[in-house]
Length: 123
Image (spheres, one colour):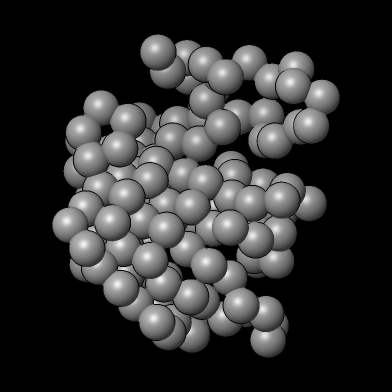
């Protein structure tokens, strides 16, 4: 189980992201200010804080950060697959997941798009 989940979607409208989230969770406390949107989701009775940041990672990507270990996904890749299936936008995430040892390669990512999915070096 990861302590949080974070994915990046390419050129995907925030309204579509919010719809994907509301289809899977009960959403409350949605607040937007500029390129940032924060909301609280409920999953199995647990509150999950979520931050959506437009124009992250090269300005064309939107970051979606679930600040909880209590999501329905065990890994970033599982979340990315769900997001891609729902949104149809390219999704990237950390390939190896989070490890406290600090041995992760920060450039090793997982990418899902119309060409398929697999490891990707994102620099």
